[in-house]
Each structure stands twice: as C-alpha cells, then as structure tokens.
Amino acid sequence: MKVTQAALPLLPLCRRLLPNRLADLSLALLKATALELAILAGHLLLYPAGIVQERRGPVPAPSAPGGTARLPREAKPPVVLLHGFIDNRSVFVLLRRSLVQHGRQQIESLNYSPLTCDIRIAAELLGRHIEQVCERTGSSRVDVVGHSLGGLIARYYVQRLGGDARVRTLVTLGTPHSGTRVAPLANAHPIVRQMRPGSPVLEELALPSPGCRTYFVAFWSDLDHIMEPLETACIEHPDLMVQNVQVSGVGHLALPVHPAVATGIRQALDTAHPGEPSSGRAEGLTVA
Image (cartoon, rainbow, N blue to C red; front, side, top):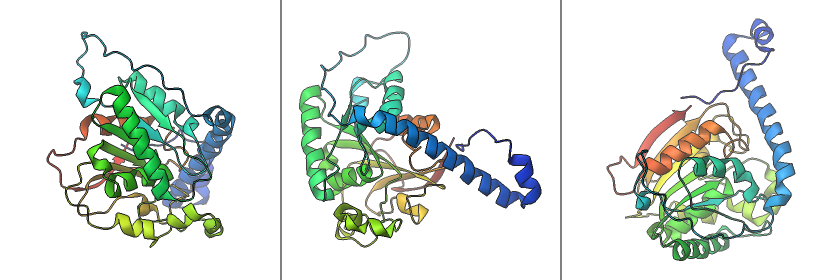
C-alpha cells in the first residue's frame, strides 16, 4: 500500500506541460518537499521541549482483560525510541501517541548528546539505557525504533555489543545501513564520516553475525533526500532476519511522523518475532 499525499491543484497543469510519468514524479517530489518543510517547521517548535531527558514514570499496571482480544503482555515488550543526528526525542511525539493508542504502555525515548562523535560510544549508552529499562519494567527484552542515525546506533548495539539478547525487534527509519554520500561538506563531523560508505563502523556491521536473535525491519523511502543512494536504507546481510519495507512519497523527516508509516511500525512490532520462519532477506514491500 503506497503512502501518497492529497493531489495539488497544479496536477492538471503539470500533466499538460510534461509527460505523464515525469509529471507524476515531479508532483510527488513537490508534495514530499512541501510536507518535509511543514514537518521541519513544526519540529523546530517542539525541539526545545525534547532537549531534556524524559522523566521515568512508574511502570503502568497491565490492563485488565476486556472484550477486545490482546496479545499476551510478554508479546508487547517496552519500546525504546532513538532519534537521529542533531535531533532529540521530540521527533517521536506523534509516533509515541500512536503506539500508546494501540496498546503499547511502556515507551521510552533516549536522548544522546549532539556532541556525540562515535557511533560505538552512543551504542554503549543505548545498551546501558536498555538494561535500565529491563530492570525497571521486569521485561527481558525490548523493541527499538531508530530514526536515521538512531537506527545505525541501535544496529551496532545489536550486532557488535551483544544487544541481540535484549532487542527483540529493531525497526529503522531512513537509516544509512550501507552509508550515504549526501552533503560531503558535513564530513567535518566525525559521526558523519562514520555514516559514509566503507567507514570502519559500517565494515564492522558487514562482518558475520551468526545466530543474531534480533528481527530487523528497515523502512526506506523513494523520496528520502538524505539517503544517497536510496537503497542504502535497506539492510543487506546474509546472517540477519530482515524485512525491507518501501515507503512511497515520503521524505526523510516525515518517516517518524507519517500516520501510514506509524501503522507499518505497529504491524512490524506486533508480528515480527525472531526465531519464527523467515527467509532472512525479505523482498522490499510498499507500505500504504
């Protein structure tokens, strides 16, 4: 199912001036760019509220059985949200609300410093945070959703620091798993260099990971301006249980915000369980 935006009034004019396919591509890019700008403006307003680490409230008691069928509590572990480069937990306001409305009661966001210069160090911080979450909630495993760089940090924790013992499902949104070539001038920042193709960190992630217990779901968009090439947001690794999910018509900033993507994330968290039959390298899908 494709994620698309409502048609703009310019559609008839563009189709008269351009071939149909080119007009459709141009309009999709125009709509995605407009959505990105709107999301950026909204996010700038919310950003100050997300700078401080969130308060850790008491763990909610399990809901009493009702008329609606629910998965067992163990099938819905806590969810840890991890933001991208130079961002904070405020990017997940809408996704968190969606998860809560659909039965996820234990959700935590982790802020890592914008001054962080090494994915490995950030992954160690994530590992300590997840241990605290497990101790606080009594759960043996968690699910993680990582946007952009956050997905790469979480993947490093899973593959290189033994995090597969704690992370049941890892969902990544627009994460440069194979490295991105966008904005070469940003190479002045060490962590950006680690996100380049062929970096030592990415070479570590390409090493064998036999027996990895985490299930990976990688969302990638055909209009993600941060991923160069676009397919770098897919995971290609023979040892990992992976499902690559294509999203159409949505830009990089919109991935953790768009309601259709949120639906796909919920489905991934509710149905993807490591150890169940899987091809290990699922074909790309299109989410609606």
